[in-house]
Structures are given as structure tokens and as C-alpha cells.
Amino acid sequence: MPPPLAAKPKLKIATTSLSGCFGCHTSLCDIDERILELAEVAEFDRSPLTDIKHCSAHVDIGLIEGSVCNAENVHVLREFRASCKILVALGACAVNGGLPASRNALDVADCLQRVYCERGVGRHQVPNDPELPLLLDKVRPINEVVRIDYFIPGCPPSGDAIWKFLTDLIAGRMPRLEHGLLRFD
Image 1 (cartoon, rainbow, N blue to C red):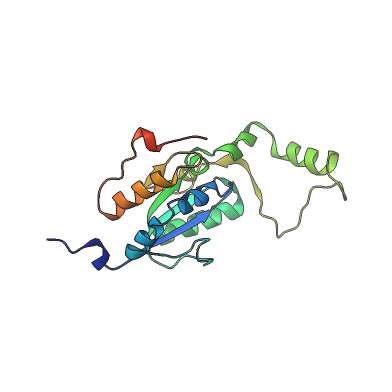
Image 2: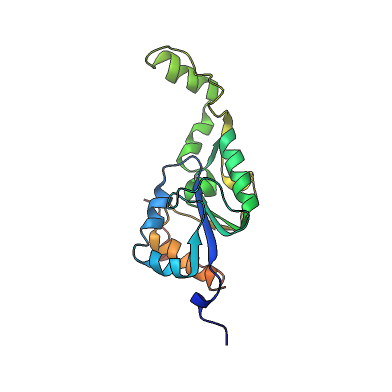
């Protein structure tokens, strides 16, 4: 007979966001009091919940939201992938580029010119501070940069969908989200 779930060593779960709206993290918080059940079997590593800025070397489950829009996103994503045994693309931006990818039909240089030079206030020039991350020519879903183990669609996925997915995965079951748990608001 296997030991109860809570008797096993705690898993490490990390979360992070690339370019997006943080709606998927808000949905994670929508698991409400069930987060206490999750805390019985898992501890949070890098996450807005902990304010830890970099992952531990070994994270069991990584949840990542947002799309890849700039060089900093690529760096964070690759570092996150290297730390996570299982990486989960959380939400439409991570899965397919989401709303940020709507700029893919436009030329980035033209967009910057229009925003900062034609409609901007102040200096009327495109910022070129070396501290600013370099924009990519196209917004990418995260699977175009690193290997992803699972995808949770939705914009954002519901807290119930995230809960079902995590409890299946932690229990050793193949995560399966029924149609009723998927939504696009």
C-alpha cells in the first residue's frame, strides 16, 4: 500500500510569467482554500507568492504563463526550463502567443516609431537604453523556445482547471481536463 500523499517528501512548484497580464497567476490564486491542501504536499519555490527571484536547482513542476516577446523572456524561459523537471505552459499566451502575438502582423520598428515618435510625449525618440530588453521581431509561444511537457489552454484557465491538472499530476495520473474546465473569456 503506498503511503498517503502527505507523507511523501514535498514537491517543489515554481511559477513565473513572461509577457502577459498575470491572469493565469490570478487563476492559480482562485484555487482559494485548496492552496492549503496543495501546501500539504508541495512548497512554492520561485513565484509571486514567495517573491523568490530565481528557481532552486531542482524544481518538480514549473508553471509558466505569458509569451516570449523579448530577449529577457528568452533568458528567463531557458533558465526556468533548466530548473524544472516538468514544465507546464499555462494559458493562451504561453500555449500559442495569445494577445501579445497580435503584434506579429506589424513591423516592430514601425510600431516603435509610431508610439514614441509620432504619438509619444516628451523626447519623441525610440528609447535605446541598454537596460531595456531587446524586442524580438515576432512574439512566440514558449514551445518554440524550449521543450514543454504539458499545456493548459484558456485565457486564463480557471482555478478549477489548474487544481484538477495539479492534483492529477501530483497523484501520478495523466492530467486530463474535461471540456467543462476549459474556457476562453
